[in-house]
Structure formats: C-alpha cells, structure tokens
Image (cartoon, rainbow, N blue to C red; front, side, top):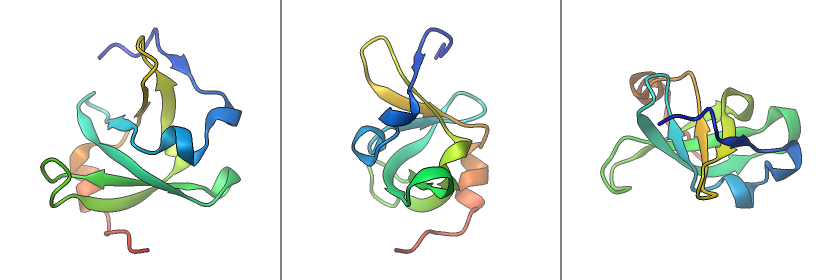
Amino acid sequence: MDHSNHVRLTPTELTPGTLEGATVYGADDHKVGKVDHIHGAGAGSQAIIDVGGFLGIGAKPVAVPLTDLDFMRDEDGDVHAVTTWTKDQLKDMPEHHH
C-alpha cells in the first residue's frame, strides 16, 4: 500500500476512539495486526496490538509505544498505522496482560 498520499493524524486526533481498530502495517508493508486499545495518555502511551491469529481468534496482544506507530488516514478516511516492526518481531514480544 502506498502511504505517501495518506494524511497523518494530528496530535489531537490521537485518541482511543480514533485509534482503536486501526490496521497496523509493518516494515515490509504487510498487515501485522490491529490496535485493540490504548493504555495511558500522552508521551508514555502504549498501543496494544493484536498480532497473529485468524479473524481475531488466537491473536496475541502485545504492547508497543504509541510513538512507534505513524497513524494516518487513507483515501477513504480509514485510520491505519505504519511501524518499523515486523510481524515476527511483534509475535516474539511478551504477551500483554491487563
């Protein structure tokens, strides 16, 4: 997916309501997961990403700093994120527990 024409979200748009459910694309531009929810507020926030599984079944939640994700809207207005993490790197992270 070509993200060059996508509009980056402003800091005021980085809210749980906007970010939750966003598809996350990894370093190889493949889908690596979806944002399940956001922990915290401000600079120390973490995105909990569901990685792996099929149709949400068997997915593993992992926590990454919100600053590791670049959130944007595509031509249809759908929010997604791009990260330098690969799917394998995310799968190797410890599982996030609430």
